[in-house]
Amino acid sequence: MSVALTALSLLGFIALTAGTALFVAAEFSLTALERSTVESHARNGDVRARMVRQAHRTLSFQLSGAQLGITITTLITGYIAEPVLARLLDPLFTGIGLSDGAAQGISLVLALVLATSLSMIYGELVPKNIAISKPLATARITATPMVGFSVVFKWLIHFLNNTANWVVRRLGVEPAEELRSARSPQELGSLVRTSALRGALDQRTALVIDRSLQFGERSAEELMTPRVKIESLDKLDTIADLIDAARRTGFSRFPVIDGDLDNTLGVVHIKQAFTHPVNVRRTIPLQMLARPVPIVPASLDGDEVLERIRADGMQVALVVDEYGGTAGIVTMEDIIEEILGDVRDEHDEEELDVRRVPDGWDCSGLLRIDEVSRATGYDAPEGEYETLGGLVLTRLGRIPDAGDEVLLPNPRSQQWSSTDSPEDGGWIARVERMDGRRIDRVRLIPVAADDLALRKHHPDQQVEPPPAPDREALSEQLTRPKDQALTGHGALPAQEHSHG
Image (cartoon, rainbow, N blue to C red):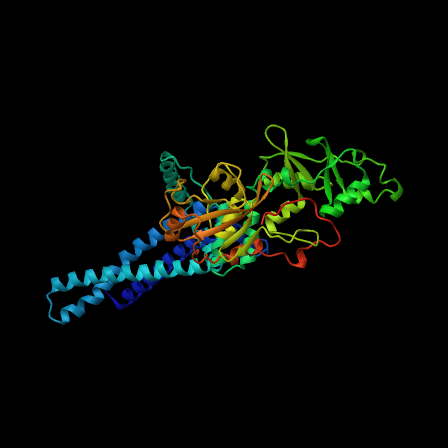
């Protein structure tokens, strides 16, 4: 073989390897790009950006073209490179005394290994890693030649793609032209939590985003102020009674009832009182001021509840249960607290929903189970309860007294038997305070396995809890008052309970 032909063959090998690299880079860069990134980049009007968008919108077709290009260049590379490299290596082995047959065989094997290795490293692995690291920059370089190749071989690509799609449909899968770019709230929440754990996202920001993503899954029943905590006024009460109630409770809105909450006529706002002269405030009944508000079922999702409240000037909605009775009320402040955490002003009580104490956590009985998990680390199994107080009632089986203790169920084994303690310890719930028949405050105490067994057999003996998990960073919004930036100025809060 002449020197010129050998040189041309080597140049052809290099060019074909570069062609393989082009197709590989185009394939991986297009699959790594998000649709939102492509569309945003294309809006700048750049020609290359629009070409990337065109390629991304026909992703399945372009990937088929890339596979065809990789196959063609790889086959031609093997056809050209292996004999050329074998002829270059053959004199080396004959020069050391090997027979012609042995030298040719060894040269051919080494040429095959060398050509395959070079093609794999420089034609596939290197461009793949570059495309994954810098997908947009790589796509800008490769999209134009990739689209041009696909246009030239359109007929063949369509034939191969349609054949593959026919096989895929026979397997019960519908082929897609584009990658799915949308993400579910669960996927986004997982991304947010991972980013926070790795330090790529501030933890407070991550908490707000995570709460926002979960908000749509909440129901009106989970968002509402329960019936037992509602302060109401009778229809015959006067404006003076409204002012006295606002001064006493710190609330700004009150349901006006005809007998009980199941017969709620509407809602009055403290601002309405100041539209009437002082000398008539003790003569005007509240039934004349009560305004109707939206009524929503307890099962309505959070997004729809927000829309109903935003559309109403009073920014409050009544929540009814499946029997038509009033279960509670939802205010705009309830919704804001569900996303931002506890929002406090000068009229709110100082008692926090969750407070760290030496042996565990002092919690509100109205704290939802998911909020308990986020604040303390205890994950309760699913059951017929929504709040910590409901869990204790379910476990105890009766209305408790202050000081009653129960062993909480092990979430992993789903064991409810008090005789089966988890091997690595468990949790004790002690009722600290009752509000009538409602559990007002509960102390959650993590207990080690040995101490748990001791406590089971000697309930009056106090034991030391193990060190609690470090949950401060992820529950900070539950265990501290909000700063002044989140505090109302000059307005009395609507009735609400804290959601952590």
